[in-house]
Structures are given as structure tokens and as C-alpha cells.
Amino acid sequence: MIRVGLTGGIGSGKTTVLKEFERLCIPVFSADTVAASYYQDYDFLKQLCGLLGNSIINADGTANKQQIAAKVFNDSTLLDKLTALIHPKVMSDFDLFCKQNTSARYVVFESAILYEYGYDKMMDCVVAVYLSRDERITRTVLRDSSTRQQVEQRIKNQMPAEETLYKADYIVLNYEGNPRARQVKYINSQILARS
Image (cartoon, rainbow, N blue to C red; front, top):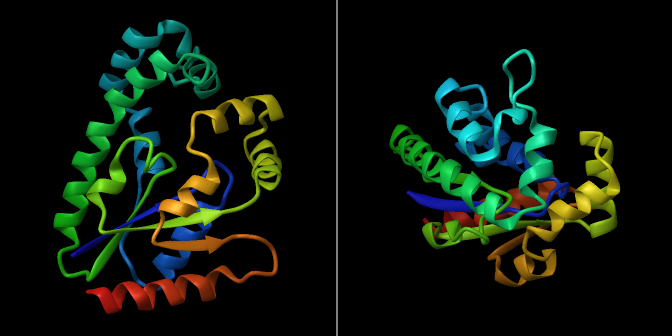
């Protein structure tokens, strides 16, 4: 089975591109979505409080994601510790996902930080989604009700978009007027030819 990494900076449209692969009946694994589910787990929240303090828990017992982001995206040491907590769990879940989809010719693993944490080395090829920095910031501000400054701080913790393009095997240009579906179909045909 071929493992395909899918990456792109915050707000680039990775989730939309992932859905295009899903429409082609390709099994897809969103590391971001899986990691987000951990914030519903009591044991994980206890570990998180040990790392970041009890202030990251809302009065109703849920995780305050804005508070968590404010702490980790302004402190690279805390971000590394949070990553060390989350990402082994993500990779364990991805291994299980692959075992559950052994009949597939390939699977897609989506992660915003594919290169930053060396996940690309576990993939057979990588697809990068590209959108200009200004468009990404605008989209993310609208989507997450964040400030421009908060989004820019998160972008600083990601590899520059141009560098991901240089490293990737395939690129999806995700701007208006450039049909994603056609690009993904072409990449799909190229990956199937490799298998």
C-alpha cells in the first residue's frame, strides 16, 4: 500500500483537497481531525493540564483551544512538548487505519506539519496544497474568528509554503478558477500508476 502525505499551510484548503480524494473512494486520514478528538478524552486532558496548567480547561470541563493556542504558539518549548504528547498517538492511530484499509491501493495522510515533524519520511510521496499567504490569513481569520496577528503567529511555526512546494512530489494550486477536482484526479492517476 502506498502512503501519500497531504500538507499545506494553515488556511490553504487541505481539508477541501482531502475531500476530493475521498470522492475518488481513497481512504483518507486527517491527523488534524484525529488530534482534535483527543481533546475530548479525560486522560489526555489531565496530561494537558500537567503541561499547560488548569487554565486551559473551561468551566464546563472542555478544553479551551484558544487558550491552548495562545500558550503554545508563543512558546516553542511548550509547542514541542505538546507535539511530543499528541503525535505518537496520531501515528499509532494512522498505523491502525492502514491495517483497516489493506485492500486500498493507497491511503492519504493529511497533516499541516508533515515536514516539520518528519512525517514525510514515512510517506511514499507528498502532495502540497498551495494558496497565497494573504488569502490563507483572510480565510483563517474568517473561519476561526482569529485575529490576523494570531494567524501570523501560527504561520511562523509552519514551514514556508514555497519550501513545501519545492519538497513535494505533487502540487495542488488552490486558488479560485483553478479546479481542484481536476488536479486531484490527475494526481490520483499518477499515484495509481506508481502502484
